[in-house]
Image 1 (cartoon, rainbow, N blue to C red):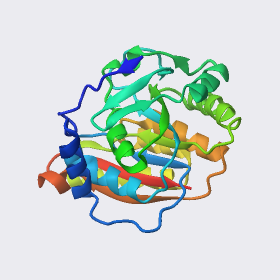
Image 2: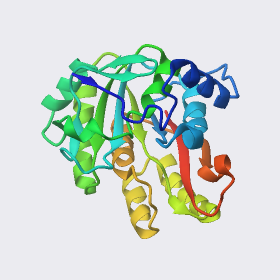
Image 3: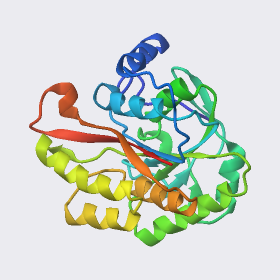
Image 4: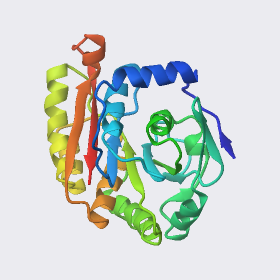
Length: 268
């Protein structure tokens, strides 16, 4: 089953040459020593706004061969926790194959995450990460999971289901959660709210993140994928995290009156 891109030419350049030039242009610092990451949090807006944050973050980590991408479900279509289990996804840099063995293991390890393709058909949060990953990682396979907001207990079930599958593999798996941070607030207010959320992300504390997001009305769209990733990181023994880069859309547009926040986080 082939998944065609839906935001190519809108969120990122549709032509390979233009895409490579853009990524090279925003990756201004060439990292000579890269870290081995267990998890990464990346934004998923148009590259003109969030591309520098995502590219800078990925430039700092070792390439992975197997990747699980937890994305947001903005559309409401499909299952609450929907896994695309077979085939490949097209990008301007070539097709990226689904890691079908890992996908099957996850589906066989529980019933919270289900095989479903509808949730992915017009959802952009995972697609936007793929050209960047292809540029930095070259060859890799992945498992995409689109996630709806739910209770912490449901996120824990998702985490348990994923980790049971991952622990059966000999190879390392990189986890990626796709989210933007505060939406459409003045730059200063957005940065203040996002600092609160990032503090809990750095501490790898999903429960406190969820509490703070609700209490402070922080409009990060990917609370579900981030919470599941943090729970997986706890389960798999991650010990530290740091913010690789944080910006708002105002850094790109010059308009600070109403911005969206973007964070790149590396978890080891």
